[in-house]
Every structure is written in structure tokens, then in C-alpha cells.
Length: 85
Length: 85
Length: 152
Length: 152
Image (tube, rainbow over all chains, first blue to last red; front, side, top):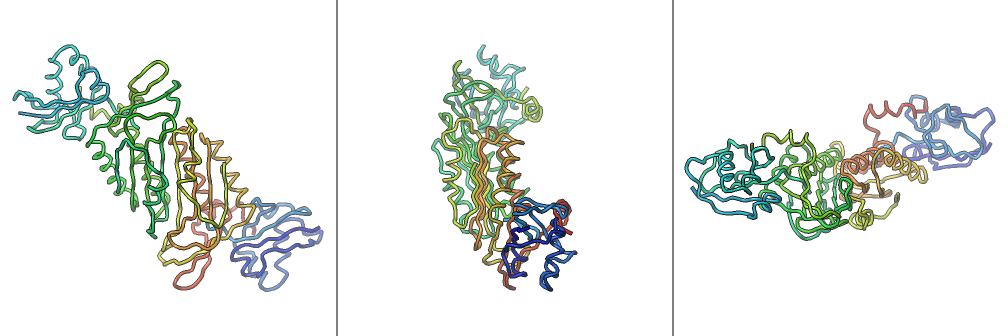
């Protein structure tokens, strides 16, 4: 299924990408699984999305837990903890 | 001794006077005694400054208790409890 | 610190601007604007008149602002309170506090407002559908707290 | 209710005016203006850049304003938050709440500000004397409170 990915702030800079359209394998059906899936892209992804790192996720513009289920057409965003205005 | 008297709000209206200069007998030396002294001026004063009534007093523009001592040249004000802006 | 008790209206935007202008230590500005409502405790209110004790009012507001400065990080503060005839939607009061931190700005602003509403020497006379009336001090708690000020 | 995330500066006075204008139910208006300070946690700060999540930021602020309305007497509310490049003394944020009562106005205004400062999707990059740095989320309390949002 096709989804939209977004990255913000330090994560966006580290990965060198602000967003993309992605075709997700059928077995990647949760936010947590997506994060693990992206780590396999290489060292930069491994580091930026490392397990021990505080990374927040939003699903369709609402904060989402790793267990949240992804559906086709969803917008998934990864970003560091917010630091306010 | 000569002092300055002031009255505000409903008290001013009841007494029909906003302020006056007053020569105080020597035995009237506290704010409480001054209030009792003024009650002797007649029925309107008796009513407005009646013992049971909530009347605030300021001595030289600071809130004062009945026991506060008055000196020559002082400014003494009587008014109802404040009702804010 | 600016403290003014006046008959004239004031310009909230200009006052707030003036308070923070160009000072890079100011990160937070909390402001409160009070205005005349058309109801008070159920009764419809038309015009009202605010009376104060000239001299003592300014002095006591100054003292409360100093107290706020000693308790919180207050870089600057403006208090403007109107007196005289006012009608619904008219502005009555502005309290604005500039601070380094938002918690301090809010706390100091609310503290000064509470004082103005409950302790400062202002008296309110309302013109309602049943005629004019001096507003009575409300809460018995408040009277209890002020008992030390009472002349018996 | 007005919610705006924008690059442009705003006019505090005009926004406050617009919020209360001519409504005789509004007795209280609490406002907060945040601006860029030249220090943060000891380090000197020059310019900074605020990034946000377009769409989610506005949506989440809208949700928090609705929550404030359900908890307090909120007649109207304006939230303006700037993004992009900012420098010391620049305004960042305005929250203004019109209410019938001052306690409600203060509480709702502080509630929305707390959200903006700790939960809304904004990220801050500061340029200090030692170069650019993304500001790190500060309090461990805060991280604890947000643990449910964490992706492990």
C-alpha cells in the first residue's frame, strides 16, 4: 500500500529528506514496524531511527503509538520531541 | 489638633460631604475614638458610622485599625468595603 | 513601572508595545484587559461610575507592584485603571507584565489583578433597570480576610 | 476562534481589539505575548529558526482551544504563532482569550500557552556563538508525561 512519509527538524536534516511517497510491503502494518523497516535503508537511517532514540510519530497528524495501524493513503511523520515556540 | 477627614462612595453620599478640616479634642486620639466622636454629630452620622456597620478606615492613605493613633496633620478617610474595578 | 488612574481610555496595543519594546531580556508578556459587562449578578447593567481615593489608590497599586516584583521575575509592569462614568464594552483596566519567563508573567499579572479587584480603593455604582445602586462587597471570605482593617 | 501559524509578524493591539470589540458579555481578556530572548539556558542566542508540521500544528492547536472551551468560560480566542527565521526581540506567539470572568480568561490562556510550549509540533534551532544547534527537549518530567507517544 502507498503511504506518505514526512520528517521534521533534526531528523529531516540527518536523513536529508523532508518527505516521500512510499510503497509499503504488506507485512509492515504498524508505525513501529515502519520505523524498523526504514532502519534497513542504511547507516543514516539506522542512526536516526535507532531503537534507543526518542523519536515521535504522528499518524494522519495525530500523535501515534508504535502499535498504531497504518492504512493505505495514510500520512506518517517522524520527528524528534517537540521543543516549543 | 487639626486633621483632614475624607469620605468616599456611599458614605460620602449618606453624609453629604466629601471631606473637611477638623479640630479634634485632645481626648480623641485613635481612629476608633474618632469614629465614635463623629457619631455624635447627629442621626445621619450615627447611622452611617454605626457600630455594627462595615466601615473601613485609612490613616494617611494606608488601611488602619481602630487602635491606630492619630497625629496632627493626619489624613483620615472613612469608606465602605471596596468593590473593585 | 507605569501606574495611572485616569478618566481617559487607553490603547492596549501601544501600552503592550511600549512595555516590551527592544528589550531582549523580555521573553514573556502577560496582559489583562477588563471591560464593563452588561450584566452583574443577574441584573442588567447600563452605565456605571467608578470612584476612587486619589492618592491612596495609586500608592497602594504601587505597593502591590513592588510586592509582585519581589516575588516574581518582573522586568517591567504597566497598570492603568479608569475611573468616572463607564458603559458596557468600555475598557476599565489594563495590567501588563513583562518578564523573562511565562510562569512569572502570568502569576504577577494575576496577582496584581486580584488586588485591584478585591483590595484597591475603588467603589462601583451601577445603573440598573431598577435605578442606581452602590455595589456591595461580595464575599464573606473576603470580609473575613480583611477583618484586621475593620473599624468596629 | 482564530488560529494562525505564519511567517509574518502580527499586531498585538489590533488582535486584542478584534477579539473583544463590542461584545458586552466580555468582561475579561487575558493575553500572552512571547518573544525571542537573547539568552537560553546560559548561552547567547542570535537568530533562531522555528520549524513546524504544517497542518498538524494548526489542527492540534485547534483541538487544544476546543479543550479550553470545554473547561472554562471562553467567549473567543486568538492564537497566532510565527515560524521561520526570528531574532531577539521578535514576537513569536500571541494567545488571547476573551471571557466573562478573569479567572477563566487567565486559566484558558495559560493552558493554551503551556500546550504550545511543550506539546505543539514546533522545533527550534538556535544560532549561538558556538554555531547552530537544534534545541533539545528539556524536562525529563515532560518526557515521562509523553512516554505514551514514544516509538521504541
